[in-house]
Length: 198
Image (cartoon, rainbow, N blue to C red):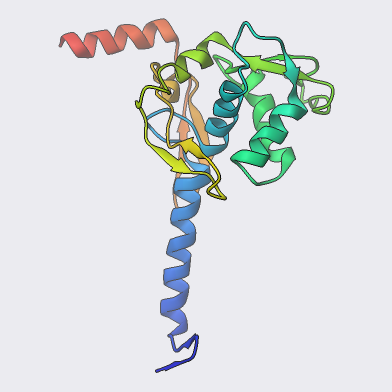
C-alpha cells in the first residue's frame, strides 16, 4: 500500500537492498581499481586533470594546490586532503614502483614524515603517466558525465602499460579486497611477449 511518497517495505528487505547498493558503490566507485587501467577513480581523475591542464613531463611545474582545486572543481567533489594525499602517494618513489607524478618539494619520507602543505609543493606528470594518457583524444575510451554533468571524464585511461601490475594496488571494499604487488616493467613486458607468442 502506498501513501503519497511513503512506501510500505519490510525492514529486512530494505536493509538488504540498501546495503547491496552501498557495497556496489564502494566497490566500483572508490575502493578497487579498474583492471583496464589499474586506477581507482581518484587516481584517474588526478592524472586526467593534470593532462587536461597541460602538465606534461616537460612542462613547467605547477603548485599542487592548483591541481587539487582543478580535480575538486571538475571531477572529484570530495575533500581536498583526500585528493592531495593521493597526489602525494602518486609522486612518492617509495610508495609507487613507477611514480605517475613528478613532485618538487617535500613529498614526505619513508620514515613517515608527511608531505608539506599543497601550497608549498609543485608537480607535473611523469613520462610514464603520459604514456597512460596517449591517444585519449582519439575515441579510445568511453566517457561519462562528471558529477554535475558540466563536462565529460574518461571512464578509464587508454593505458598502453599494464598499470595494475606495474604499481600494484591495495584496496579494501565491502566484502572484498585487493592486494596486488608491483612488478618490474622489463619482466612484465617479457611475460606479455611470452604469452603472445605462446
